[in-house]
Amino acid sequence: MNKSSEKTSDRAELVILDGMPPEITGQYLREERIKLGLTQDRMARLFRVTLNTYSRWERGRFLPHAAGAIWLAIEHLKFKLSLSNIELLRDLDRRLADADAMHKRLQREREEFERSLIG
Image 1 (cartoon, one colour):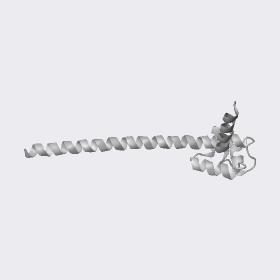
Image 2 (cartoon, one colour):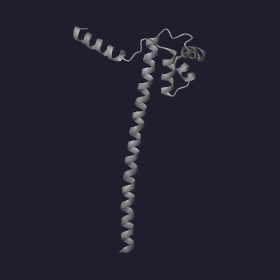
Image 3 (cartoon, helix red, strand yellow):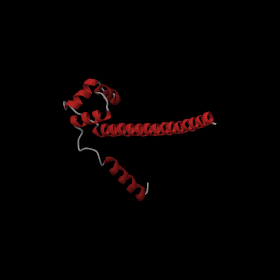
Image 4 (tube, helix red, strand yellow):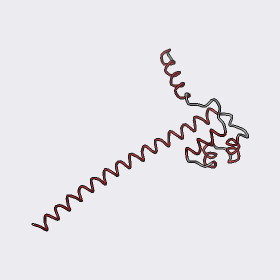
């Protein structure tokens, strides 16, 4: 790897890690879980730990050893949810456009029908 690609990867790493809290706390885990709309049980299954373990993390009884991995996993979940929401919005836009086109077509047909009654 040459020096310029090393600098680029260093910058990318800094950008990625920029939002990482200095430590993962139980409060952080709880707040992020709630933002994601997930239950403790679902989070435990995603992290492949028992519900008791995850619950202890949130209560601060003990915290995960791989805090960086937990943070990255949460960021990944937020990113996937964001992509899902974007796709949902695109689908809604397509459906709205289809409904608008149908409305215009029905309006034209109605006008033609009314003209045929008169004529």
